[in-house]
Length: 104
Image (cartoon, rainbow, N blue to C red):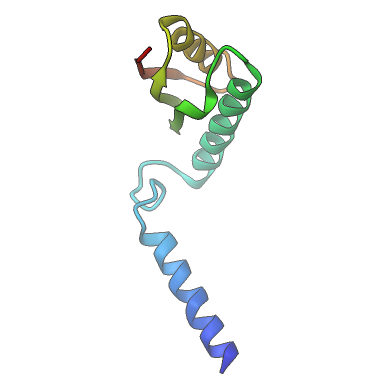
């Protein structure tokens, strides 16, 4: 009984992951580039966390095909520019779209 329930749960979880709207499932990128993009996102977030002049928790980082999109809020134009510079200087980043809003 427990085995059947666990198997059903695993199957349901697998179907959910495949159909949940992931960019790989929508044919926007290959699995390899998806993994690369996840690595870029992680690297950008880590660099922002190390930099004390950027509030890493207030800035969202998303990557698709090497293009990094920054969104969220910054306390100053300098913080916004620093976040963009960090993203641009990260390995394998092709382009950066900076949609961070400055809100003092």
